[in-house]
Amino acid sequence: MTNTLRTRVAIVGAGPAGLLLSHLLAASGIESVVIDSRTRDEIESTIRAGILEHGTVRVLDESGASDRVLTSGHRHDGIELRFEGEGHRIDFPSLTGRSVWLYPQHEVLKDLIAARLAGGQDLRFGVTAERIEDAETARPRVVASDADGTSLEIEADFVVGADGSRSIARAAVTGSSTGGYFREYPFAWFGILCEAPPSSEELIYSNSPNGFALISQRSATVQRMYFQCDPGADPHAPSEAELWDALQSRVPGTTLKEGRIFQRDVLRFRSFVAHELRRGRVALIGDAAHTVPPTGAKGMNLAIADVLLLEKALRALLEDGDERAIDAFPEKALRRIWKAQHFSWWMTSMLHVAPDASDFDRRRQVGELRSVVESEAGRTYLAEAYTGWPFED
Ligand code: PHB
Image (tube, rainbow, N blue to C red):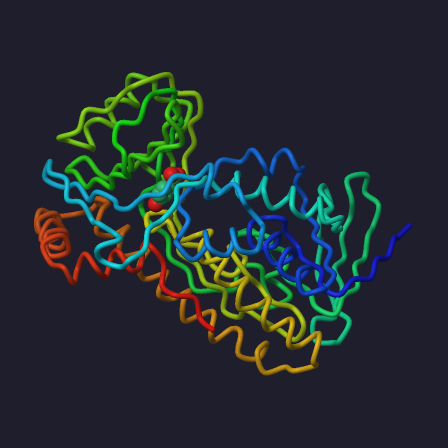
């Protein structure tokens, strides 16, 4: 048996991109259906990064999608770059007039899911998309199955692939599930969550001879920290004492406040941009379109920027039959995507120690860090990119 559903916009993936798109479309009176293979609980409990750009916060707040971001999130007016045992603060407001917010992605997801359901919108968990058909017609379709294996076909005026880095929607746009520009890195992050007071009020991005570490926060009692590790590292192998040694040795000059480690994971690093972002009436946004290493804190923010462009283009297409904005969508989105790719690669390469780094490479890297922190132009470039470039009209 196959159930068939008809909607205006079928959205594959209930991550930040898919949910926000659905929310903004609803505000313009355009109906959509969002499906995701995961359960609501899985989506709301997966630990992801936590920095929101100034513009991302504005969109979430003004659209009514996440009214908790300003009350439960924490404004951060700077970060510290630490190298050779010394911290150098990058002060965002004085350099750019902007700040960022620390508000974890799963909290954004909780807010967006609650907003979608409160609005009586069609949001289906446990529904797995198998493929997208008829991309180049006016009636593209998502072929899916629900948790009991019942087939579901969603016919729409437009289909959006917002289904993350292992996107199944991508094949309908690029011709293969892997088609894209791609880079891997010879290191990963070992991430922990621990029960401890903050070791620092602001994030510390630390370069040390032993490799990179990031000291981030979650609350007054829970902290998030990462250190550079081998991509094949087993998250369960090190003891708690070994983890604290690894972290502490990568932030010389700061004494970390230790506490029980209750969550650990290894995050692989990739840079990826799909060869195409749109074919006919199917488009890709968020991690389905691009992946960045987490050092620049750009992942979710870039997804939100895609949504803003696509939502406008879909409104013009579906309300007025005007194709100009959807035709221009890939090129416009790619301008920001490649800037964010560069920034994420640059922060990553400047702060991590490659396994094959020579003495020359190490000294050159410290020279690079020094030329950033000792120059107002250098600090401003970093602050502009980190707090987020203005959104395109
Ligand atoms: C985090 O708090 O999880 C976090 C913050 C900044 C990053 C990456 C992760 O660049």
